[in-house]
Length: 214
Ligand code: SF4
Image (spheres, rainbow, N blue to C red):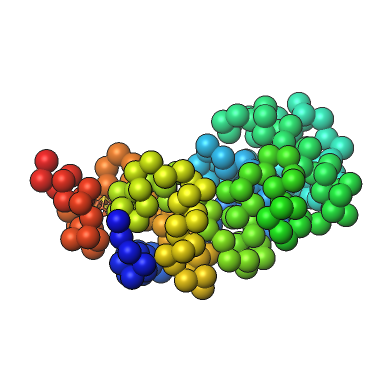
């Protein structure tokens, strides 16, 4: 497995390739960003960005969404996977924001994860992007690339991967490392066709070396 020094160096190499990595979800407020992150579960950011302008215009704040009917919200998001469940979550989330948090998106992991539809990954993304709270959200890209690069073990869960990354990377790198690893997974080390032959991490990556040989 990669040690601390090797992990930092690998993430720095990724940062050199993607110096501007950041969230690709569009939103104009913390509330709307939270909605976009909930919608992005098992959906691409592009597909979420297509539906959110109309959704955000209709529901400008938690109070307006809290009063919506599921069928009405479904109409706005029906091109996204799991839209029926997501519509219910969005409304329930807005209702809890109104009743428990005076309509304001909270800034702690425990409060965020108390909201319907908000798991640890969503909460970590919101903490980092809305409030600058150091966090590392582990999604499918982060899971895949940390396993390929042997930063973590092959069977490690997202929760374990988060813990390992927090130990191996300095806190000051967490938010940027999260975005950078997602870009790395989306545009370099993709699930089906990673671009190993030209990868600057090929020397450190046994998985890449095996792929290049075969
Ligand atoms: Fe991913 Fe291939 Fe680079 Fe390894 S060498 S990090 S598998 S793109």
